Length: 145
Image 1 (cartoon, rainbow, N blue to C red):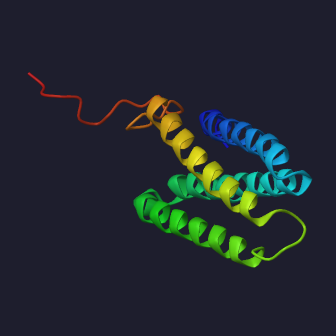
Image 2 (cartoon, helix red, strand yellow):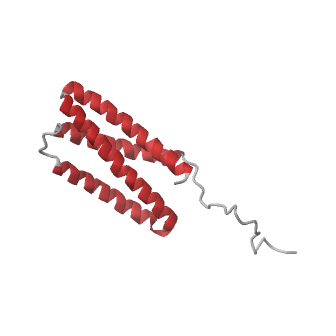
Image 3 (cartoon, rainbow, N blue to C red):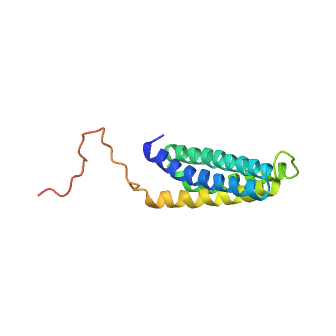
C-alpha cells in the first residue's frame, strides 16, 4: 500500500474512531455499560467494513483502472447492505443495547464517508503518474525544423 493510501486511510479511520469513542461515552452515560459495548462494537464493525472496502478499492484502481468507478459504486452499495444485514442480525441481541448500536453504526458510517471525502479533496492526486524508472525520451518530441 502506498504512503498516500495509508495517509488517506488514517485520515478516515481516526475521526471514525473518535466519533465511536464519543458515542461510547454518551451511550455509557445514557444507557449504561451495554450501551457503551454496543457503540464500541458498531465502531469496530464500521472501521473493519469500510477499511476493507477502501483497500479493495485501492487495489482495483491499480489493477483495473477502467473499472474503478463501477467498482466503487458496487462496493459502497455492498457495504451499506452488509451493515444493514449486520444490524438485522443483532436486532434482538442481549450482548449490547441494540439502539445505541444502530445509532452509532449510522453516525460512524457518516463520519467515515465525510472524512473520506475530505481526505480525497485535500489529496494531491496526479492525473498521470510519471514513469521515473525509465530515462527514455518520448518518440515525438515536437516539430523538427
